[in-house]
Picture 1 (cartoon, rainbow, N blue to C red):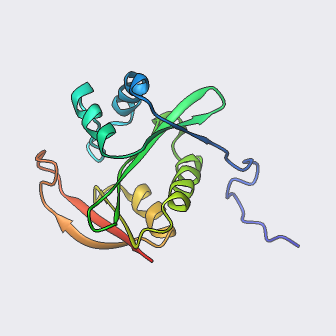
Picture 2 (picture 1 turned 135 degrees about the horizontal axis):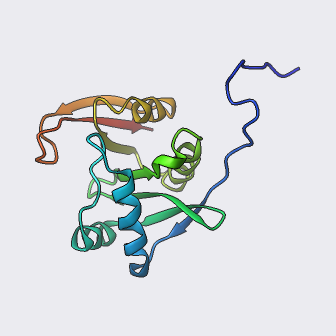
Picture 3 (picture 1 turned 135 degrees about the vertical axis):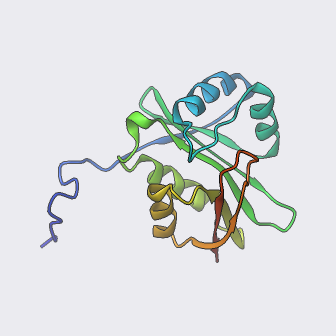
Length: 160
């Protein structure tokens, strides 16, 4: 018999999302979502130039649920073969529903041959840290004023 976890989203169906590989034509939708997700602990792409720069560095995906764009996720492959997750953003309206976890799992599967996957997140972004640690990421460093906005970032890495 299956163990029941009291109050742990028993009624929640398994979250399903589709990753849609972005084209330049999706950049406006991307920027809208980034702005919605922006907070002190998440630095969003600020403008089209910044989004274009990120677009040139590696695959970017819109995370869709049905016909709704509910998030974005992107990464780039560095010279040493490591994969840098430059962004995972979920529309605040859909946060906490497991959709980011599903999207991250799909990306980690896509880059499974990389010897190391790493990212940065704000030390107060507990939800993100918990998510990444659940996939085996560990905190390897703390960098002050990482984006030049006065806010620190933690570096988390998954080594395979």
